[in-house]
Amino acid sequence: MQKLLQIIIAMMIVGYTSQAETITVTDSWINAGETKTMTADNIYVLDRFVFVEEGAELWIEPGTVIQGKPGQESNASALIIARGGKIYAEGTPDKPIIFTFEGDDPYDDTDFPMEETGLWGGLIILGNAPTNNPETVRNIEGIPENNQLGKYGGNDPMDNSGVVRYVSIRHGGSDIGEGNEINGLTMGAVGAGTTIEYVEVLYNKDDGFEWFGGNVNTRYLVSAFNGDDAFDYDEGFNGKGQFWLALQASNIGNQGGEHDGGNKPDDSQPYARPVISNVTYIGSGANSGNNKSAGLILRDNAGGKYYNSIFTGFTTWGLNIEDLENGEDSGNRLTTGDLMLKNNIWWDINGKTNPSLTDIAPDVPDTESGGKVIKGYSLQPARDYLADASNNNWITDPGLNKIDRGQNGLFNPTPTPSSAAATSKTLKLNDSFIQDVDYIGAFGLGDYWLAKWTALYYFGVTTMDISTSISNANNNNFDNNSSIIIYPNPVEKQTTLEFELTQSTNVTMDVYDATGNKLEGLVSKYMTQGNWGLTWTPNNLVSGAYFIQMTTDYGTFTQKVIVK
Image 1 (cartoon, rainbow, N blue to C red):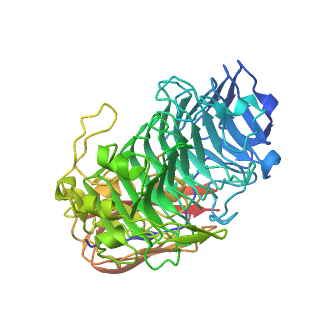
Image 2 (image 1 turned 180 degrees about the vertical axis):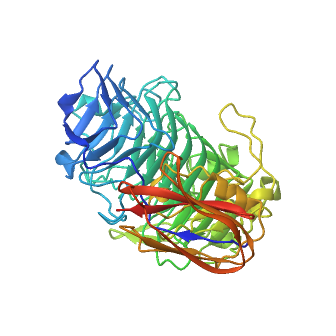
Image 3 (image 1 turned 120 degrees about the horizontal axis):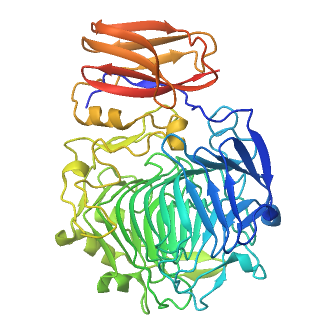
């Protein structure tokens, strides 16, 4: 597919101002049974652990910024929703709720490097749903056993901890004790009465998302550039998930999915059997140098069902299913049907653009650790499963538009119209939560749900929006080499826009604010093929980010430009 143009801009958005009042929040700020609200006109700074206790409700307005103070172990900062407490963090696409570290302007990628990790803790939600732990109730990792507010687990699969929607969690992962870096979003025994959707974790030092048992169902999750695993579940997690994106950085990241059964013994009930559909897991890339980048690992008797998904770009293996010589293991879960992988695409794995089954599921050699030899095992059962045509696992290029990790606006994981991801047979689950869609992976044609609310969008890793995705999907008249270059950017007084049209076309170019209000028209005329340039002076515009939308006969593109 050709592109008519590509606007390359650094990115920022209006909403965060230096005039906002800063409110320091300690654990005494909200107590059991209380209701408190965080409002968008303030910045809230978490000072160490802040617990939302039983009977308490924390409401967070759209557009609110919450920052965590730096610190490790007992000095680490984190927001913890205890059992019986509730959080109602309901952002919007235009006004997401953002968790970051103290002092960070979350809409400015020039104040701190985007790659910062471990600068505060994270968000922890603890519920009363079942796990397969020998003790029904236990403390979450890193919180001392004598702290009753750190406990999770129970017998209510429909337990309700509230709503987390349109939330971006950034730069977390400080050590909260016992060598445990906190995950971006930790869910301990969270029940299916809880709503979690449109949540992003960016540059967390440890995992992006981790489930410890529970039954919560989730949609539209983004785990980007995190230090360990993108999605991790154990302790008998039995929720459902759909439309998840994992994007590893070129230098960090372990598994796209690390999935464990739970604690010893491995046959503890309930087995982990989550249902996961329409995910796109993208590794560090064949030439990245990250020799830890891997796809899925299922072990310690973990089950799980992956459908209609894409696994690509991993430097080592794509699928690792533990198959021990004796005892319960994930190989047994594969045999019994507790573990399924159907209608999935595998590509660019183990350094091979067109991988073999052995590349995807290689044997694990014996290793030595602490003077002891750990016996390896064969992944032949995994290879046999993938080779079974009835399971519809395809080794083929999914046909994604563009995988790029730079802040150049090029990342676009939507499929091209004639690609395998857009045209391959999907498995219809007829499930009350899982939506039946006609594409493989997390994105369909014209369904670009990353737009506006994610840090990936704000900071220029991706600049696609819904209208762009639709126009790209239906247009075959673009040139990948065409671009609009804006300099200087950020803009202080005046900037120059240069672009190339590979064909003559009608062109309109307009400036919008962050709420979608048109502020100014820059171009509205028929323009011939060739190189063009114009100047723009942002008169009377306050500092922040604005959108430049360019529409041609071949598509519409919406991008952002910073105004100082």
